Image (cartoon, rainbow, N blue to C red; front, side, top):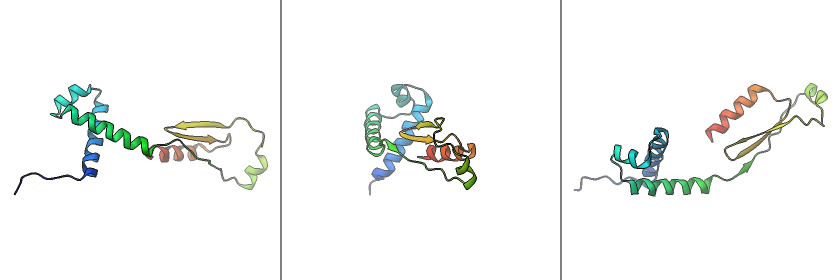
Length: 116
């Protein structure tokens, strides 16, 4: 029997995602990184393009409306004409944060967004 193992496309894609991320973090040029790691430059470009295409198909601009849950006290003191709300643009997501936000809630939201 043959001595090679065929990997599934998903396994190959995962492997190449890791390689591309490693090359990005290294700061090296593609040519130097491929040479150092004995990787065919043509394969690198093929997978980089394929992975970029897949992530472009998945990543679309997404707007998420976040409605804060206010207690009765907060609702009574909230100024409906407040213009000090601000927006956060993270990756392809836009979040409007009300002026009376709780920093701990915003920290939790940012952690969730980073995992996307």
